[in-house]
Image (cartoon, rainbow, N blue to C red):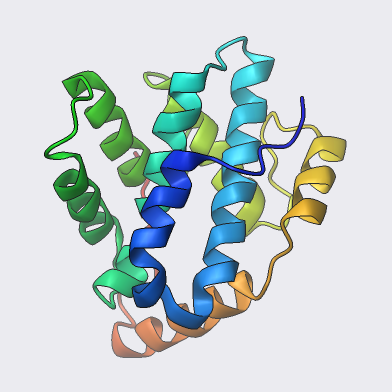
Length: 183
């Protein structure tokens, strides 16, 4: 499979939120593309890849961490989902597809495997792979991940997470990682 270097659904979301994301834009965009490519590799390995899945995942990824910037909140899953829901209000997508977008956003930091939603599980694996610098790859092949990471460099994404996470942890020491989910 060739790398996905452009996804119109993802680009549409990112373009709309470029100003709010500000100087972190390239870091977030590259993170989204790393996760998109990783998730698509998981789907391809399971013979589940399709243009519709690519568009659904791309759209969801545009929003998946957006609350960090749109709502200036490190407890960002609900704000991110709310923004996606508002964006989908006038879309003609079937309700099931809209629910897949919300599931991807809500579950992408889940520790445990997602057995009831292949798109959310693919994104979960790819996001963990990216956050762990490729150490927790799930079913993503090592060589494939290296190719993805080389094409879409970190651009400071992990540093911004550490900084924003550190600020949040100082303010909320009893809930330093509010976005993490067991189920």
